[in-house]
Picture 1: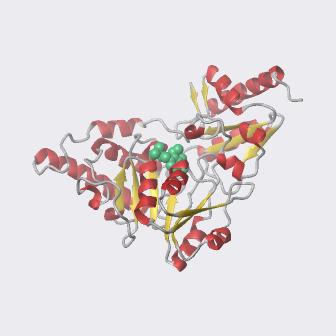
Picture 2: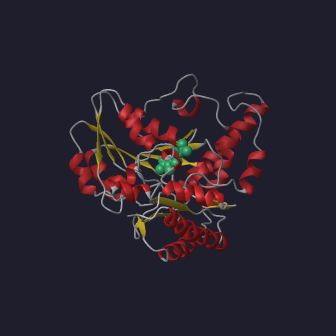
Length: 364
Ligand code: PMP
């Protein structure tokens, strides 16, 4: 099997699995030796991640992944009657959390044809009631990197909290803090699923969303996922070694550009190194994904979260693609263990599949 859907999730690295197998069995809140052993592993993991992100360990709140971290950032900072500025291309865990805020308004700032937001549009969207700006670091469908540093300056000047969803970018770009609240996810960087973190800058007002225990500095009640957190720290450390991303992405882009009627979606200059999103003129993206699956190649059309819905991707729509172009899109995403042979194998299969689908249902 050729797995090129690493933006959906990645394989556990053997070193991560090994670290997790050594996780302590006690409840980290217990005072006895078994509990203390688990507590020590969590605090050790927190310190190692904090050091890499260059933050204080107390600024890290472990969660069940990026969806929970995004929800905590949004519900924890925005009060009734307040206003959020976000973008049209965020992950649903941001967009739908904003929509679920009671008595609040949200402005979704648009993007250009490459999926990039203009910081001055963010600035213009701010109102006297704005209490949060939420902009992702790198897009999970097309890989476009947002100008988060410029937006951070705007937010700071206005004293508005700034949240950055770095779930897709962590492990692919240099991991350091941006914003007041930053979301991380372990399973996008060859760590375990269902563990992540919200990095909360000291002094940022954040209400808990979940009650019933004092864990995570009273910000996230519930017994910690000890093995998950241990694996997360290992994955963050290993991600510092980099991967074959840029080299393989160029190979993938070069190969895809030889297929007639291909359109590249996203930015060439401001791009995460592991994602290539294309539309094949006249063919349905889902049909390509299914035909590739039958040939042993795993890729995705749009994001995995949206793949159950028939609506074309909100990201491609915001970038101005026509519905038929958006429906024709396919996302290839590389992992640290991807190889040249896999890329070449996938390219050969894509050429065959696209040619066959076009023959079956030629466009008028
Ligand atoms: N944000 C982004 C940008 C993502 O790519 C994802 C995963 N598709 C999430 C949030 C949700 O992450 P998790 O699976 O850890 O809940």
